[in-house]
Amino acid sequence: MPPIVVSEYKHANETLRLTDLRQALYDEGAILMEKVLVNLHGEEHRARRGIEIKVFRRDFFEWYEKQVFPTTLRETLAPYLVAGKTDLVDFGFRVMMNLTADFSGVDRPRRTPEETATLLRILRTFGKAATLGQALGDKAAIRAEIQQAMDEFDADFFRPSMARRQALLDQLARGEITEDALPRDVLVELLRAQAETPISHDVLMKEIGFFLLAGAFTSIHTLTHAMHDIFSWSASHPEDAPRYAQDPVFLQKAIHESMRLHPSSPTAGRRPTCPMHLPSGQDVTPEDLISVDLMAANRDTSIFGSDAADYNPHRPAPRGASAYGLSFGIGMHSCLGLTLAAGSVPRSGADAREHHLGTVSLIARALMQHGARPDPANPGVVDRSTIRNNWSTYPILLGQA
Picture 1 (cartoon, one colour):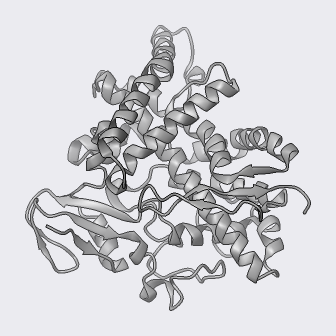
Picture 2 (cartoon, rainbow, N blue to C red; picture 1 turned 135 degrees about the vertical axis):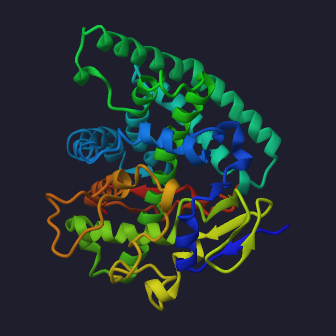
């Protein structure tokens, strides 16, 4: 039976808010995604989200963006400035991995290039679980590869990270340390809640692997799409080119525009938990699959204007919608890290010194300030292994042209 497609923005927005629809986009990737937050429903979802959202407070976003992330970004970018070039996809993985490991609860004790390469390889393999429903290759072979990566992640990264945090929580319970000595991450909160909300080791491992994946994987592809849009617009609108490096709020608006056009998943999948009536008019049952077409909804001309399918960093703020549309979801499955990645939607006259820009804008700004531009000898390559239309490589040059 073909899925029921919802593509108008208003209907898509209302459909995603319905609490009687469960997540169905990642059913094929159950090897990693089963029982993680994004796939839970009802009371189990509310309980898990209630524990984890404690990490994602406004003070955490401000602290990370102002105090932690700039140092990570400078350190990651430094060798590429010397080389005068990098690949946006690989660079994005490296800079975002540190961020997502920090808030997920994954330690990197050795901090060696080999350790980084190992975790990057595992992260890329985890990404295949999220896209397994759209994969075009041998899915059994992909699942075997994912299982091997999970076993390696569990032994080399998750178990040591969990043991260190549990030891710290035991010290806190004995009064030997204060709350300030604990890491600010999801794993600490899940371990702290084990007495009231127990979770098995296997599910804990998958949950932290999922956070590592979701925090990095989506932002990496968002960054690459945004930089491509910036380069393309600058080539045809040279008067705007300097603004990307000089005006942080303009840059953030431009990135929100790219986020609207390139949601990390082109669709959101849902299944009813009972017979019901959709806002778009259809009657559905638990046997039906509902596909919310985010690409189409985010290009709805009644919301975003007659040129909604085009990239325009000067687009007026839409009425009744976010500047980035439904790309971060809405309702119970909205992205916990939205503010960390995208920042706050700027108001007129926003002061960049006080405004929360988000990590994607901070990375793009640093790249533009260092003369980032496409490498004419090595054009980017689109990943054809899924239907998501992401970039597999995107070489750029850095420094003075």
